[in-house]
Structures are given as C-alpha cells and as structure tokens.
Length: 149
Image (cartoon, rainbow, N blue to C red; front, side, top):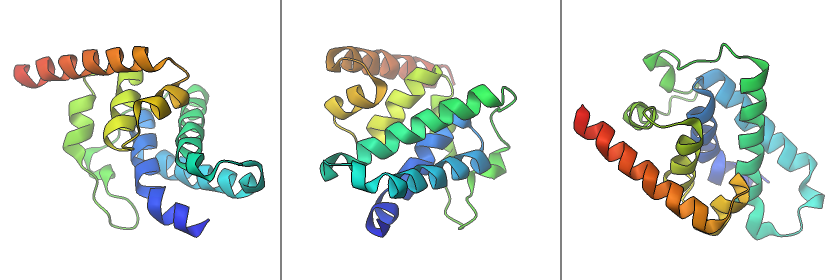
C-alpha cells in the first residue's frame, strides 16, 4: 500500500484541490482516499485499476465535501503549499478557474492524473466519446480565456 501512496499522493491531492479549492480539505480528502484504499484493499481485484479507484474515491469525497460546506471557496494564494513544503503550481489553478467544475475535473484527470480516455470516462461515469468532446471544448475555452488575459 505504501508504494501506491508514494506514487499517487501528490496527484490525488492536486486533483482534490482542483475541486475543493482549499488546501486543508484537499489534504484531508487525500488522506481519506488512501485510508479507504487500505480498508478496501482485499476487495479491489484488478490492481491495474487502483489509480482509477483512488481518483474516483477522491472525486466522490470532494463532491461530498462541497455539498457539506457550501462556503468552500478558492483559498488564499499562499495556501498552495502543502504542510510537507512541496509547492504546487498556482498558475495551473488560476488558469483552469475559468472552467466549470466538471471541465476542471476533466482537465485535471488528463493533465495531472495522466489518465487515458477510457479511465477518465470510468471515473466521470461518461462515454469515452463524450469525454473527448468535452475535453476539446474545455481546451478551446481555456485558449480563449488565456488570450483575454
């Protein structure tokens, strides 16, 4: 289990952060995602899908956190440094803030998580074709937003 934590913790954290916009909540979600992985380890048959399972869990926990606390908003810019001292790319979060929550998740899964289309479709519970189209539209939206800056 430790190898999965070391391999995916930063990506899970960044993904959760892209949804909840609060470093402390994202850290909690990351920890809880790995705790759930540990608790459900014997139930996960396909080891190749652990990354997908982790990101799906992080997404669900993030959405639950947003529903619980409607006051969660984009944190102070200085909040993008974790307790361990690793710096996260604030520019990335500023850029994708022009997108809807769903578009941000899609872009984050592809860029941060480096997921394949099929895996993203599974996490977001959508068809692969729909994911590809949404991704292209999201990129076009980002290009427009960047040009306006």
